[in-house]
Length: 422
Ligand code: MN
Ligand code: MN
Image 1 (cartoon, rainbow, N blue to C red):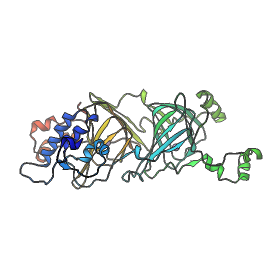
Image 2: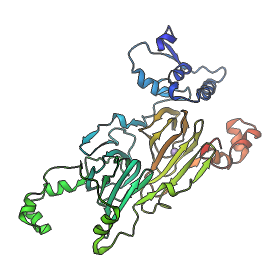
Image 3: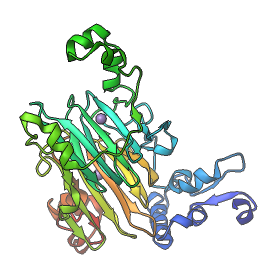
Image 4: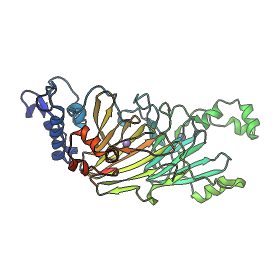
């Protein structure tokens, strides 16, 4: 394709974007951005030695290049080495079982992601992620279908809910829990952990406990018959197939026993919430411990951006941002210190990461809604926008920096819009 267009194998940013345009709705808009980028990085009379025309006559992975237009031919505003902040779940090893599969993106896959990790999991109808717990807290969002979640609270009281698409849950560290797919087609969900070093291979499993405890100890511990102990399961389950569970109310009643059900709610229904901020270009729902009380170590923003829209330039004072892209196409530039900046492209199933305090924007580059979640290891969501900073700084001070006139200064939004254009 490239050869057809260019005898000398030179690829310009413009042509490159056209090549990848299946997913690019606002090509015109992006081309305009390109021209601005070129102009800004090459002011009149200043030789930068950089160009937006490259050649690539040797081997290259054309499908990856096309899906990563801003990596293959970076905007001229990009500079220096910024560690990669993208990892697609598609490159993760998938552990496949009767009953479901799982794959993870941790600090081992994405070295910059030190504070958080994620697991993408599928369970068939009846498929069980076995009873377990871990040393990290677990936040989850249901992406497809429905599942029954069980846990006990610190007082040993039972918690059981059915989780539907869009619902969240949060299990603190050490709280034992399970997940089971419901009919008709089970579930798929995203788990996010407040520790980049987390691994789904390192969880405390019920099957591990009974397999590696001497039989006479199990006998003493449970007070069950010798035959029952002898016939007990040996090995690791992790994910396995079982019958679809019965009615929720029945499970809740039986599990509650004499203690009664837990008064804590480890789940949260996002569909019952009104957006925290809504503009004509999209909306954001912020969910942190101010509304989802249980979620004391993880805060989230669930963002939808319509075609042509953009999550404005901003940063987070308090925590790194772990992102998961649910649908659509995006590009994000992370502006690092020391004259460094890097732009990367994202689509459904990709994980992104921004270290705390580094400015960034996220632009919808597709012709469908862009949906993603921003996750933070914190009890509170926090951000500052570039516009609100400048709007609340003396105009002369800002104008002296940017060489803009008062009319341009006055046009800068006075409050953060979150999603632009308003
Ligand atoms: Mn878990
Ligand atoms: Mn952000």
